[in-house]
Length: 310
Image (cartoon, rainbow, N blue to C red):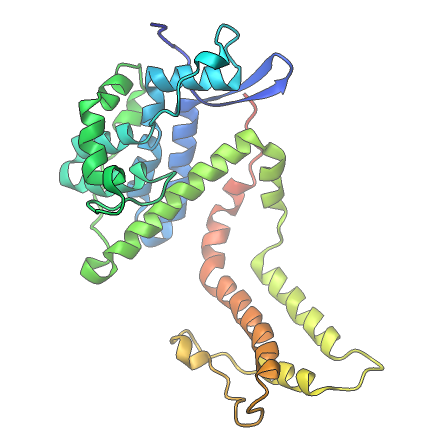
């Protein structure tokens, strides 16, 4: 059996018979750093960092390294007709999280096991063997983690600082916290993979203007559009302006955002809906600025980085 010394996360053809390599240890570190940054605003960076480091541990398995070299054409000695099928590369990391962190590792096991297919249930009749209660013992019995750990894996990947911050959300909100962590991991994995596989697409993400700039442009466009010269005002325009300029309350729940134009335009829901679309867009931009913009600024510089070329 071939013993690999270079472990690949991804490869792409740069030219005929020329390949660029995305080294696995680099991918794990990059995803960990990105996920940690995304989770910092809700005080969960260590959880996201560990999830990022371990999410693709299964790619150290010889079966995966054979698979990526064969199906990509990277290995000239490989033949596509003998290529193996899809190789499980997420269960090993989920097992490692539980073995390393004990009961708290179950949190990371959910994130890692589902980082491609979606958060799994623990036990369910609907998903069967895809449930975590089936996948973990199945992967253990098949030796997925043991295979991965036979590789020479850098110590900083295997032994990061253990997450010590308390669990968030208590009984009512714990599921939301886990979904936020999951989003941090999945977004980080996607962005780092995109930077390598399609660097041109990744660079487009850094070209967007800031949220407050977009909000200013939206207001300017709407004022110009509603005040067009040589055009008589219509009932639709009247409702649009009423809704668009209705003062937005502070964040106190969806019911507080209702604009009561029903009495004036009862039976004319087409007018109301037309105005609500514009009002909703304005509200969305302002919410994005007030709630999301601080986080956006927090990792904007990191997302502007030029894609790595290996």
